[in-house]
Length: 470
Image (cartoon, rainbow, N blue to C red; front, side, top):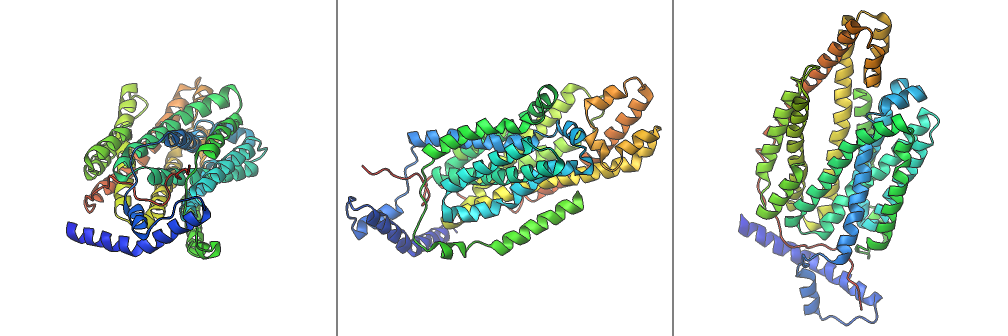
């Protein structure tokens, strides 16, 4: 099997060599002062892998990628605690779910398109464009005087966030050898996790003490800093040669359109271990065991979530989340390397974009499905609440919008009614967690067909850092 893979690799190199030579020749033609390369030199320059030593410009680019990742992750969760305040001020009603889902939806559906077009227009221009979209959407959402403008702003913001999520992974793949990518993907996962965790805290604090609009305005100076770093330091090359219309013809616009329609249909119908994993993958080149362990921890964690109630101690709900988060971190860090190891370098960007898409697509399901299950369960047990007016407020998705400390304070004087409401919420959440267990177990079972592939320690790509000419 190893011999067959080696033979195929040599055949692939032979087939792609003329294209590589023509690209080098074209580059030299644009630079009259460059020395002339002989065919043998061209062959050697084309095939010898890039060195893995990181330059100063790499370490200037990396903070920019970290900052843009933090921006994108922050807005996936920052609204969770502030949404009741926003819904009340804008009288959102049943539109509240789209304030959250508009971002997740738009960020998900654009990821394959960004992955495909990054080979045409280059990583740099699309990355800068993504941050511009993110900042524009943040400004629109922050200045919104109604639900429509807020949802439009969140949609534009999501387009930028989707581009950021995809292109960061692709750029890291262009700059770092496959064997080392786990460390950098894991670091990005940690930043993503930090942004996701701090989002609800920051969102709630801003909504309560300043204004919910600053949840979006805070992105503007951060986006400006990110744009500055990207503009001056993100100098990456991409092949130029074919006519742009010919390259655009390779983009699957029809497929992307069908994908958008499919995701819309689903939404309408459904209305820190990661760092250690990345280091271990880089050290050992093994990832399969982390798949099993990650999904096992997630399965146990989800099962333990279903045991929580209003009497559970802080140690229980913190410990259970740590257990689940450890498993999720392992899965996040260990899934991209085997995907990239199984495809050709020419397909790397598309494969990485598909991975990013599926990750975000799962996030959409992770919001839409539990919300639908929770609301449906609440509807079925609202009869346990004796106050008719409160039953009306909690029906038709109102339970989610009212899920805040304000409701407890409002009902504080009526202990019996407060106990009834808490009991309804606990049972609704428990039912939601119980139905999540099969999904985690299914992930564990799907690990069995995964094979262990060799992770390369060399960087072979046409999209790395541009080499400066003296």
